[in-house]
Length: 167
Image (cartoon, rainbow, N blue to C red):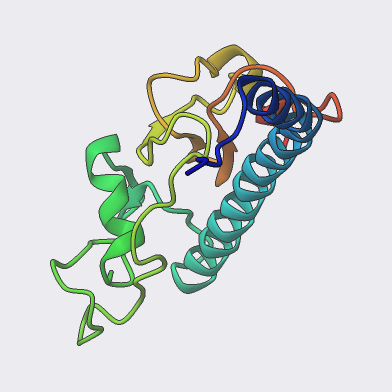
């Protein structure tokens, strides 16, 4: 009785062909991953900027980062986004609006920076350029509470040469 099997030459030939195909296809997929991260970062920034503008509209033109006009510590800023707030900017511990906490929540949770996977926000002084504050490791986002500007905290440039903090 004769057994049928692949020869060593046939196996080597198939492995070689698969290797060549992988070498051709892999760069294409890597390019898509880069574009997906860039798109995610831009979309998260758009969402945050829209919510900051909505917050300002509902709080007499004052952006998140203040309570009754006084600066709010960085550690409490997240609450103004994910919980309900009153007109002065005081956050409740609820996500359900009820008197006097009638505004928000603005996001269910702070979005992640698609590059460093961090979602926390670091304050940047109004006079400091985002380019001088970006380090890519301390937080996901950089925020100027005086102006309501927000930027991604990631160094380098995207596939088109735009600095990430300039998104």
